[in-house]
Length: 339
Image (cartoon, rainbow, N blue to C red):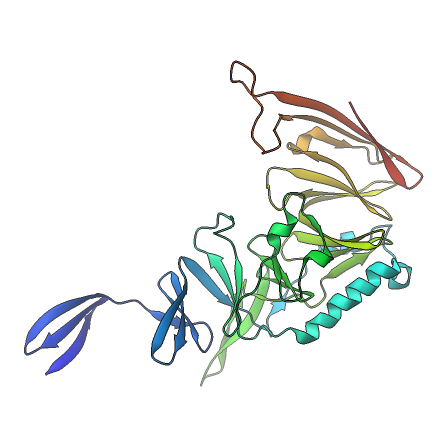
């Protein structure tokens, strides 16, 4: 007589009255009909065969009937003085946006899985992925945005995905997020429901505002990105996380935290064009006059070489660079001086 017995998580084989330990049992959780999660690893089931797909990850389904909640600060950003009707947006930029919207009709993520590394330290080998059961992993184009956070749309293919951190992705013209989302989960047969929060879903109305030469989109929680028009080229700009919005008497400014470096702030002027005025490391070093829109920033930072390594003195100490940045608002835009 042969039987498999389970004591707690340990599995034993009972054979002719003798017990033999077979090891510790792992739970199998199906993410889609043929993608399952076992421990920290992801497998694809093909008949009775399990193929390892990727190790040390947490997988998430994408739910089409979930809801992405929009935070109140979106209305502040949408009311900026530079906001215009779609008819006043640069025609090349608007055409490119409409082209991206049309791609959504080819988008089917019902059986897709968002794969997040167990240890969230983003690198080339440890980064979020988008997995399809039949097609495998979607090409990742996030590296195109290094180091500036900007790249031309021609650098991205139709099948490619761009992850902005661990909470947002853009795929085939559609924005997805797992920040501040919710869905109702029903428990049959009693039809009682519970709310699951922070699940992956589409952002149905991601466009926050349109200006003459750029458009800003919501990407979950405090994240935003933009499309900008530069001559004949449409650029993707992964702006980052909204830290503060300033409405002065003459201009609208926004401070974002760089999406790749959370200790680096960037100050933008929201005019007809999206103007990057300055980067700085300490928030208190940025002073903005609410009446005139005048900006003063004092920076002190370590000098880096072309490889990103600190430049050292002969005694081994780091060389510091000091900058005083002034931005004066004139005729609808800022004049920038660095000393």
